[in-house]
Length: 638
Image 1 (cartoon, rainbow, N blue to C red):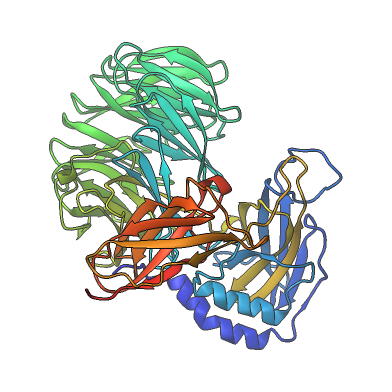
Image 2: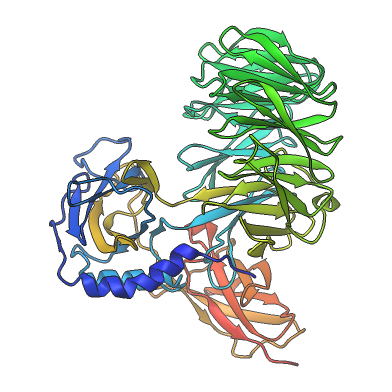
């Protein structure tokens, strides 16, 4: 399968016609300023919409939402009888810019929903708050941004972010609008804006920056420096993207964790066998605690109010009191520990022993070992969903699943194949996770670098439900950036958005059960701190009349025209071209060469008969692949 099964979109498609018939008599309050709630009552449901600026960055006469600034979008959904908050819903929402001030009528609103559900290339919303992106950290110095649910045309590759050096580890901030990537080969941290997929900064972060960790409050990014001569941590202020401190610690690889209140940072020093405790307010060392030979990982439990440090050489787990900064007890396993993970919001800890291909499960409240579980060869990572712990095996294509709800009695195991080859055949590695939870509950995404593929697995299945490729690149790790609304409190569904263009917008809302459909209206004001927005319209005029032949080089000539002026756009030296064979089974990228008078040319060799889409992007004009209508070429056999 080349596409994922998406139950949400299927349900929404089935319900949209039924909803349309029931909405002819709906009533709603008139449009109000963007910071004032707008409400609609129908089908026994009350939906209150509000969009509010998060933080005013410029002064001016406007008190509403400004272009280029972040805002919180929220929907408060209650039952009209007694105003009971309605929890655990899955509303679908799109943000769409309108051409004028007049709000969309019910028919226009229904038409928008039907179009958006079809993932049309020609008609896309400004923001899709139902989608998510899958990011792969690749062996080469780049990151793939993949849209697994739609993608443009037949290709799911949404963007490719070039890095100054190959990435080793990464972390998203809480709002998911910034991505931090460590690059040991260039001694830097890349900071990426996930709204635009542009590089904000490359911050010098000490020698050999490897592990990255973000405080719970997001104030500081902590970076482990694994250089033998200059071992320690670099602390970066996330508001200024400047180095706040460089703190010397013991030698060796560093793992990093934080106390629940962010008062202390805990840094392991593998070579020295110590744990360095750092005061995050003063950015100064407090204590070096001897925890055991070769401490390899550290984790903090809110349940047991304790800190756990796993030691590779003797297999012991030191349990530390984070208040007194003293060792409370030690758990004894076996030499060869590599990974220690704690069940999120749960009672169990998991220590992975690579030498024995085993997982030691211990109870957090009592600090007692409960199970020793045999897993696959070369097991090196653990990831959790609500129901299972997933253990990756680098020497096998099979992923082991441990059922969490049965651990008080027994360790129930199952497994599934995540690919055709063992991941270690690719001879690449990363500190970051190769298995991550999918946005849909009870599902995970698994990257297999040997297959150069990403697999989608839903719990209860014997094999992955779908897969998609990374387009000839070797993926080392995965992240999911979820654009969907989150239930921030009971009955309130929110997310953060940023709209770069001023104008009038619809928040297109669809709820399958209870059934509701509405287009809420809001405005975005011009931002005096930003350059004046000028609508950019570009189209491609094909000049080559011949059709391409299979197996032979084909030169395509075309003209790029500004639709606002009717004039040709000349001398663009960064005009990129993506050619793919529908439905995305082959692709090639190249730069188009300007040859004068707004005419450009590029060449490719079609490998087989079929329909080819030719997409264009211009980074200097902020024009992505999805903005210009592509050319469509049909090949003929030679």
